[in-house]
Length: 406
Image 1 (spheres, one colour):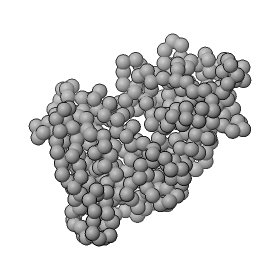
Image 2 (tube, helix red, strand yellow):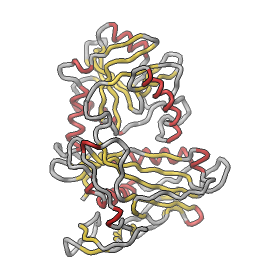
Image 3 (cartoon, one colour):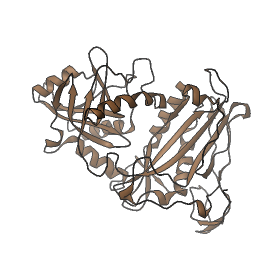
Image 4 (cartoon, rainbow, N blue to C red):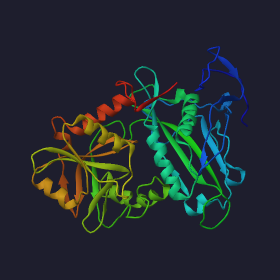
């Protein structure tokens, strides 16, 4: 049973001045949030409720070398219920990590009325904890919610809730530049009725887990299987939304690729075999164009791919540097094969929150292997991007994309 406990805590994300550095609390409350919106109607909240885990429920922090992605979780979670009959969003609550209680008819269990996000918090070289461009994650989450019939929320106030949760579990943010704290905001339809319809009740919750590098301690290029038989997304669908229903159907194909010795799947679409995504990553190519210039290309946001935060960051940095041409356009496997045969294909890499940037050294398409010299470039673009993004995330470069948690 979870108890209310008295602890010494530091100031936790309050906009009001405090007279003492330390304060004793049982249930911690902060006056903050004029909160989440229901269409054009707003529900006002004045405090976030915090119920701390008792000392006997606090878990030991794992060693960085032992971290596996998504295997270990922190001591607390954020929960916010939504009930249309009660006016919309209810009071945000931070509680000890605990199981959810759902009715067997909850819409999430039958109709996949669910979506999520992936973010990270980093402990910088200066000891400051930062999250990376959370506004883009919350905007994307709201777009996914709108398409799912789930309630939208105020972006900035939700970020404040997430920051509060991270502040409480701040000792779970690894003291290492080879690790981070993964943040998984999730929104599910909880109305206990059968029938495909807009849920009248929902639950927003967030869990945290410390993670090392996504592909393990060895930074290596990956291989991709491009099989036109399998399609991840199609026009008019939800390939550009971060919904669980987009991921479950990929598991079988991923296992098939691994059984053939490949690390990931290169997802194609259409009779012309358009390149869309690599596994759960956005995909980038660097090549020498017809004018003899280096050019970075990535598929456009046409509904087939997820508008990744790392993807946008790569495009923003590249355009700011102006050292090579940058294009968002359709890429086909015919073009990839042609560029490879002409020795003009220099780099291929994936990008996403989990891996940041991941080089690719081989693609198999129609039983032919396409070798890519990504790791053989003297000064690869993917490595410059990786260094810059991680420098921002770990505070080596002051940048507005790194939002500090005070």
